[in-house]
Image 1 (cartoon, one colour):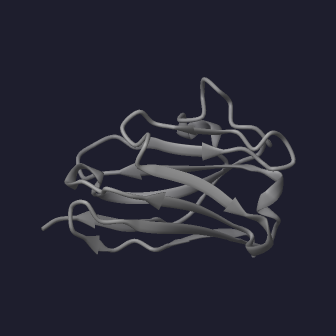
Image 2 (spheres, rainbow, N blue to C red):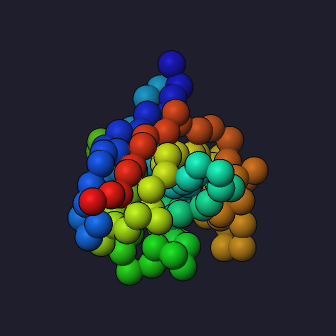
Image 3 (cartoon, rainbow, N blue to C red):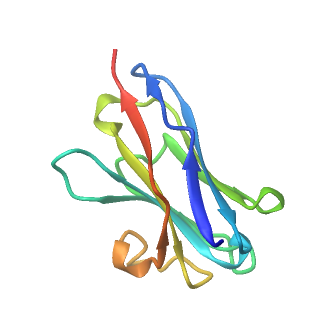
Length: 130
């Protein structure tokens, strides 16, 4: 079965860190660009980061709100994309989703547009609170 499964969400104190995982089954994730999105209650879905396939240029993009704190990476041997989140703040609280784009390279201008993505995971909850 072809699917994406997120994990790693948790309750963490402000200033803490988490690493989210997006594991693919049924296909090789390495051929595709993969993005992370988040949605907080009452807010629109927000693009967090995107990583291109290592079979293209491996480029990455991140939202200004997370630059310097979040890092997207991929481990092709594990068929997994990660989102390392450091210095978490209450405003980072959201359900985080990974999504696959049926192209190899994150589009520079549209990487944060959810309509560019073709397959989504079920999400994992991240709560930042003291």
